[in-house]
Image (cartoon, rainbow, N blue to C red; front, side, top):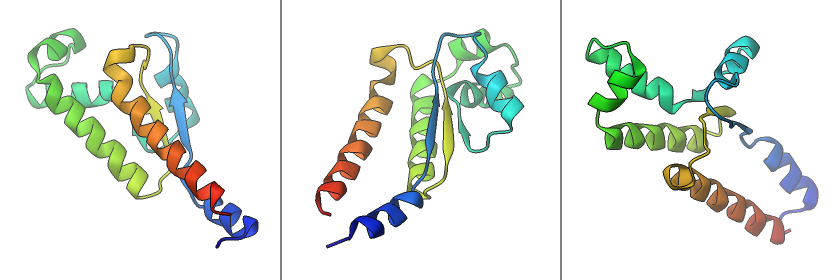
Length: 122
């Protein structure tokens, strides 16, 4: 059984996840860049990278041309790797559409549930 001190020491080694949530254009990405935050998980960045590979630079055109399931798979894969690696990271996404973002919410609920389970073991 872990002691409280042992749990807190282990918890201090866990990743910190920062959410940048809000409507488009309020400055989420600008803030992330200004502060020099690392390990940024951004669906928009993934969309743009898919477009750049097609020689496109207009976000709306890219969004309409690429496979959104492919973007979601890449986003989930990057998220899982950051969590697995225990890295601090920033989620820079609008996160205001309940249906679209439910997968992320569920992932975080699962992580919180696991933390609470470990906390009960103390």
